[in-house]
Image (cartoon, rainbow, N blue to C red; front, top):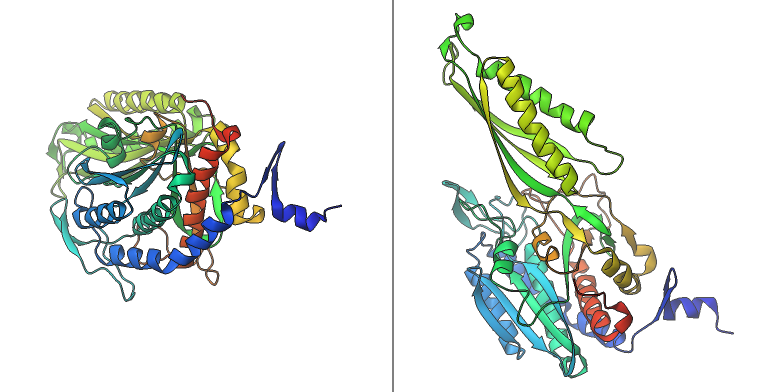
Length: 439
């Protein structure tokens, strides 16, 4: 009889599915370990030379040169600065896409890393530091490592792999669009047609060595809200001669909060309506003619999204009318929900558990942040998961969150990232049982 400990090392069990350790896994693991310092060097170089959305020319050039050196067909200039590599395996099969985002943020780095960014740029007409404060530098370096491993195995691969190095995930200054949306519009999922797409996001607040995932809605849809309240200007000492848009705006802001507490079934999905800025007036003793406020809306399904949009219009406009004022409401839909295909997630979960160890793979709570990976998932089944990179000696309460000047990640996480994406790709392509039906 095979001892249970030996069996556990050979098999991963989830529900009714049991998968043996693939014959290529040891080869992938050894190759990832051998590439570790190379991946770290790439990441440090990108970190020291960050570029904002649609300005990633240096990064894209390094990526393209690396892919070409591996004999991968390369298309440059996709969605301005994006790079797409196509690796054809030695055997026929489906097409898998892997995505990494390349852009940095308008954040001034505060740490003292030897590869600290000192880059400056103009963003929204303001001078700012530029920093990889969300880990996109790591995403690019990890996917470059994955490409190197898979290129070395091309004769064993049954199918085709698209490597998508995407610009502008964080958006583009002055433009209401995102890199993934632009790449989809330019046909990145076509010719050859992609059957499934995988992506990861490094996390500074999740323990290093762990992977987290969630089937279905994972990260929120994001809408941008602007409300303009029109009143009647008057002297501040004679408010009865005004129609006060400041007081009216305060009432509207309070009213908006009742949408979540009284109109949304929060037992099914949470939602957020937040006002982030309000501006009106120029002097302490003048009641202004109008007030403008801007905010954000976060939802996880279309029904809630549509209901919230409807209620915002009703609340804002009717409160304004009750005060003798009027309100204009503008809502721009930005990111859709990052929605992991449930069937694909279930079928690929054994891969994540095998690579990281079952005890280091767990469900993640709904994230109110957003990801433009969602634009790919609108077209093809996709799985987006999180790679832990919080140092062991740091607690989640101490770790600097993403988009902050002190953002920090443990580079020892990169090997697991390389192994995860490589193994997901090979499992999907080489095990027919893991192939979900194409949408």
